[in-house]
Image (cartoon, rainbow, N blue to C red):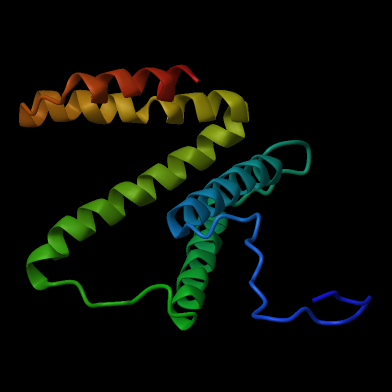
Length: 156
């Protein structure tokens, strides 16, 4: 069959493949990187310079509220679920939440005091520190591939 301009060809029409990956983990990681970089640059801009925002604790609180609203958005979109923490996990969760708060405060102080590049370099060393602490505290030895993968992670 010959198609004239504007005519629909005979047979089923196949959908074209999108150039964007349909891989949810890839999309989630890309989104996470974009948000993290944007947040770091905005934090640096807000907390440094001549007109610096003089309330880093208030900034951290606003950041927590904004994060909570984003989580609620993902729940409403059906991409996440909120469940209650089991009683036996409360102390572990409290410890993790406290360490996260300290990390957020230390990051804000660091971004205010040092360059973003240096702050990101320090954060890039975290995988090495985690593996070393796990090796020392839990005596768990990882395979050669894990140790080798740390080289490009931290050197890059």
